[in-house]
Image (tube, rainbow, N blue to C red; front, side):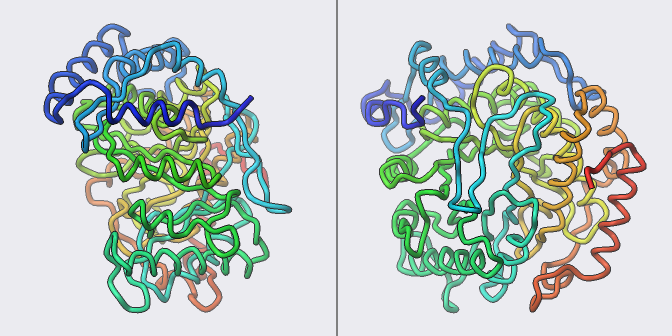
Length: 461
């Protein structure tokens, strides 16, 4: 069956012709009342004792609530003050037409990116990503370090803040220069490690629509076998620049990923509403972003992380809802509190991967140090998540078994979330010249891996 786009121009035109609505009215009179209504109607309730819930009834309720919520609320264009609305028939048609898998990357480096089932015995597709900015001179060594990781099925590079010593500013010539430097250096790193066709998600440095359009080039830039991301505005909002990306990605021919992060403690409320909103974002990604896969990072309003007990429940419940009721390819992005080269960050990576994998998600790992600190990310955090994801599938864990294991892991770091250690920068725990981890970080990693094995996790090797 055909891939997205689904009625692209008809749907994007609704940003010009849909019902008129101001921002505040959309949130206060449309979004928030409907959210409370569907939570009550479908009886959705968070249970802190089960951060990985195992009731199919709950997952299906979260799906139905998210679907009803999305159809009733729609998506607001903040530039035109028009609501993009959808009827149930076309939404179900678009859901029916999803292929459920794609061949991404090129040649020997190509991989199959596909939807997963709850308690799936197949390992997750893992995209390694530092999710932070880095110094210009560290960009190539960091890319090499991540791309040489054997479990990386794809890679999204760090973001440049400077190019040729100049500060990058969105929608300016420096953004175009930085975006070109980003993607050209990324392609160079992939060649250096012998993976020239690896699936790349690029380029985070290209913040604007103009920046993204400037790097569409299969010779030196982003290829049609690679992916681009298009985000949303808080919550369920979009603007013309984002819609420009939507149209360009489809016309250029690359894969589109929908990048959304519902806020726990924001307009959706607490865990129940955040899970419902995450389902709605999957539907927004399909219909508005015209996306081939959905990449989600629900995060805590105070900690800006996704590894608290409540947020692990949000990820698990919402991914189960999507996996049980659709063929949408869903990817779970780990936002961690602690920084690199700490015991805590490795436990957090393990917890996020465990909850996501058993619930039917693929993995995007990881954003250490709350995604706020330059240079503070390494492949070791992503490696831990990937190894745990593969172990989870290798063991064919049930949700009940995974929940019991997750509670043991939570006990190792949960009381330190508010004052998580900042850890080290890349160059402090990796040898920049060789792009390899320090002996100290290797030993710490091995010790935590052995402790996870003692808790009951069976690594496949």
